Image 1 (cartoon, rainbow, N blue to C red):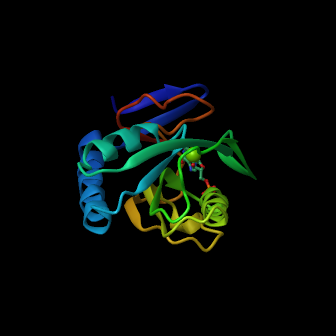
Image 2 (image 1 turned 90 degrees about the vertical axis):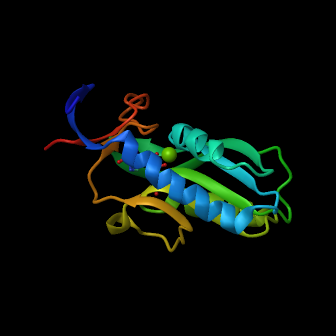
Length: 178
Ligand code: IMP
Ligand code: MG
């Protein structure tokens, strides 16, 4: 499937699953090297990171906890600039090594809000694992510890990422056609 329709827009195949899998293999190896034996807490950003997180966590065979939070900053294909935490975290955070698992970092606002909340709650070192990063769109000074792949600023769907709620179930990444 080279071209697909999601709602009113046409998208074209951009990154096949095989490449995503290889990128996630490398991220898992880097995370294992840093955090094996540290009992880290992985915090998965719903909804977008669900598929990436499942693939990443299957590749990590050491003791770790996984929790889920839901925030929203996105409407249509542009950020609203507002971030709200919708579902909280019940696991102990104080003193913990934490890895925030995110689908894509664009302006960095979502990760800034999330890492501020975690620091306020006394987390130990907070790291970020993002499958994608759009460096040209960065507005906040956020360090991403593990990046799957850098993207230009095209809007993408698939592998958990959506366009107005659709496209998350696609196994590959598609980008908006102009
Ligand atoms: P930020 O807060 O500006 O860094 O935006 C990050 C959030 O925007 C991510 O968690 C995604 O849910 C969403 N997002 C950014 N770019 C895209 C995209 O190309 N497709 C789908 N969602 C995106
Ligand atoms: Mg998101």
